[in-house]
Image 1 (cartoon, one colour):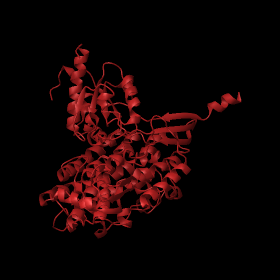
Image 2: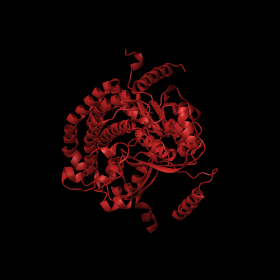
Image 3: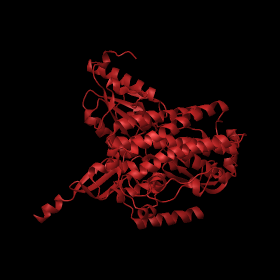
Image 4: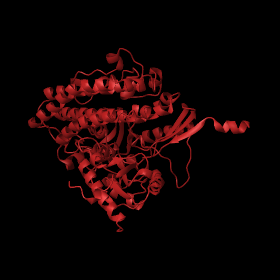
Length: 144
Length: 410
């Protein structure tokens, strides 16, 4: 991967579970550990949405988590991008007919990057983060 | 004045549901006096997806893919328990080789799950370099799982009647390599975790769960074993290939000479179980008979058998976190008439309360993580009617439970 000018700063991500099965959580944590090591580019998970540029949302957004997802999104400073990790956040996936879904994610907050897979591989998640970084750069440059 | 001071103590510290220390949403309310936890209450149910409800509208072959996604970490265990229940109802005999492959997969799942937990525990203690080491080591078991099943997580390999893929001789070498690496590494991991001074200081006598409490609260799995309760389904009620193998439950006094039931003992049990799982997989590879891996490879035929099935059964499996329990009732239709899941964390969550009482606020993350909670497994029940919510008392729940038993029996 060639560092582009999009790498002019570290990208910090906040991870929010909106009712996921844990599969995507494991792969997100696996993606930040030494085999993949995106931290060498300054990409890391942070503990508060107020510190984050990127929101990683996993899960199909169950009823109880809807308002919390909106609150977390609103707490993030601009410019921000949202990445939806996993098939169930994109379409409901295997949980499509559940009575307790308020999502897919893009019905609740605007999503910029979709990463498909149930769960996606760590490589796919990192590719998604790079795409999100490029989008963040474009937003800062005045594009939408 | 008195009213004012009554409001001051204890302080209520709410933590959650979205919280960086835990990857899953759960809500805690701590009553604090200074740094000390006086009382604690928690509200699970934040990730309830209605899986049982969905399952009762799908056929068993579709449900196995749903059970994989009850929990991303113990996918094999849930599918295994569900498949065992359906097999008993439909009278399907799983071929011996299928049972051995299921056992190998279940043990690999235990290895990766315990290593995952060890990393998370190190992270909760602020020991991030150990987190990274454990997770780097864990990737090798993920590679083997991917080689055997085709997926890293949510394997989709266990099917009603057996497994969907065989283990070919070329794969034996990959498994062997992984096992010998782990057996070599284990003593290093044990030294790093158990002989480290800061881990010892943070975990010894922290979050103690007495044997009486462990029995009284019906805890299962490594959480119970760390408190000295000798329970392990693989030893007590052997299923699949476990009856042919030599298994005894791992208890902390075997390694440490005493049982204190603290966080440290839970680390001991889980680390030693990684070694035990390596031994089980090795025994399975040596003893594995040849033959088919599934009772019925054609899914249409399998579905026809399941459709005719009538009756009820329980499937129990020792998941990495403890006993995983599936009750299924079929009445000659495509979808099961009843399906109930009791995941291992469901039994373990209540043990948080005696563990956390009297501890310091800084120990909350490691104590909460020490039972290896898996909330996506657990969140099964919600009472929502329109917009009104109601709180059910113990008597109400008991009444509902009795009514349901009667309904099922009639």
